Image 1 (cartoon, rainbow, N blue to C red):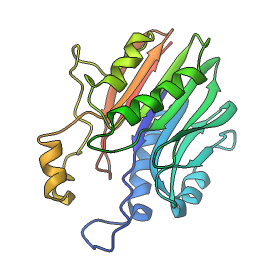
Image 2 (image 1 turned 90 degrees about the vertical axis):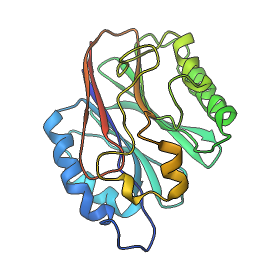
Image 3 (image 1 turned 180 degrees about the vertical axis):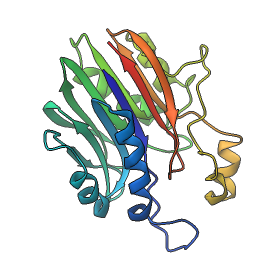
Image 4 (image 1 turned 45 degrees about the horizontal axis):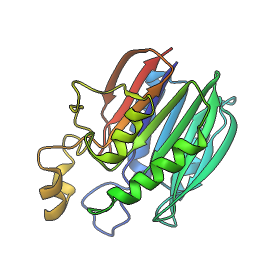
Length: 229
């Protein structure tokens, strides 16, 4: 099984410094299609782009969408999914998507962003863990808005999850900002990310990790993918 998560960069500001998501989504979807994944999670999708994405999906694909964070922003889970459901995570109207693909429970999420939000994100992770209690084979993928050593991600390790992206105990590939996109950040965002951060990850329980990697296109985040069985 191959899965992919990608934060596709919601940019609602009236500044002509970056192409609209409507213009950027085509090359992103081209990269997604080339990877031939069984399940694809997308975050920060604008309402007006949902139709564009759905028109390019295979007929057998079952998209699951939910509003998350901003009123016109959605999180999505695409693929041959079954038993779809939406989990309210609270805090900034965040949501997680749950479904099954080939006997594996897939969770797609985008946790709240706040410099003091570790407790909030830990609460959100706890809600996810309760929702998958008793599930043996699980993949949790998303933008955690936290670093690998922070409590909210350590909680997953304590519940039997391993990162498919890890290069060491805490090291991960830089997933934000993607090459060429740091220039669009304001001064405090540049100060926060420094040379790069790794908020995006794929966690696996009850499965073997065979390979993983990142993919680049027109977003400030790179996509992260993993192949498991």
